[in-house]
Length: 208
Image 1: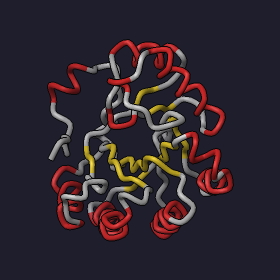
Image 2: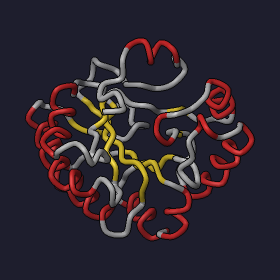
Image 3: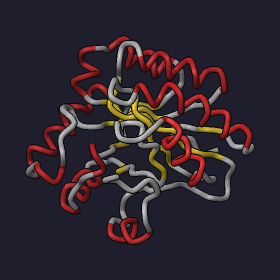
């Protein structure tokens, strides 16, 4: 495994200006979905969320939103937030500042303002500083399902969420083809788990 299922304290301390989780005092979690929109998978996710009356945040790749504008619109019409995930899903650790900022800017016409998530969770302090200065909140997470991990099983992905879910958690799934084999099994179980714990899912900009 090459990623942290639960973001460690020292990583959060190293990047204190980024959003890792929200208030632990409310019975709310924040489901997020990266790398869409996808013409088949995203509508399936929307239907799962509708059944529970949950809202979520979708971090869109600009090029995907350009290809499937009707799917991006369906996300908004269903009451969900769309966030910026760069235009081409670039790795901040391998991309110079100006190119990275252009990727964010090129994606912005396809998303709601104010929320950005770095692809792979990889961003430099300088990139983050500039993106925040441009009016974004940089959103990370404290629970990642690992649905993209082909070496994992769907059971492991669900266990990742089940073991670390708590009020205020920002949880990552992916509405992408790579994640689909795990997502289709793990997401319904996660939605039921959230309900069983007496929690709800809100979009990141909901205050109550």
